[in-house]
Image (spheres, helix red, strand yellow):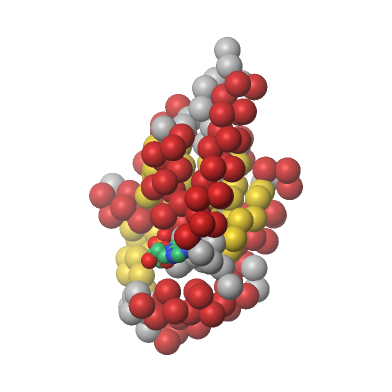
Length: 173
Ligand code: DAT
């Protein structure tokens, strides 16, 4: 029985997932599971996509690598996909959103090539991650949050941290 919830913070690259996760980890005491880092450190890759300049993830290896952490609870999963994590271990899914102009500037600043930039812009405009979250998890646990300006991070994090406090109270042994 978990005494702290597991939360997924997902969204298109550049929307602000890592920034949210770092602040949420500080204010809630939950652990930030940076999946990009875990894939590298625990060798969960299955090759490299030269065209997109990104690592191909072996999802089975990744799940094996974090399963124990998820069973313990208290994890914040930071990843641009969400439907691979078992619904029974997930308590809240936050889909971070960002308007196209702002996202374009952030991805350009990151040095993304044209193809990668275009794919990610399309994904955000088509609400791909929001749909993926809604298809994989109960509607009540999927929340859409906007992140164009700094104050939005603060209010989103406060809102999630308050939710964590309620979850812990409701699920206290
Ligand atoms: P992700 O983890 O989704 O790829 P990130 O947290 O690394 O995104 O953020 C990408 C960049 O955008 C980074 O330079 C921080 C900035 N950023 C994110 N959310 C922001 C916000 N609400 N206001 C201002 N800048 C933001």
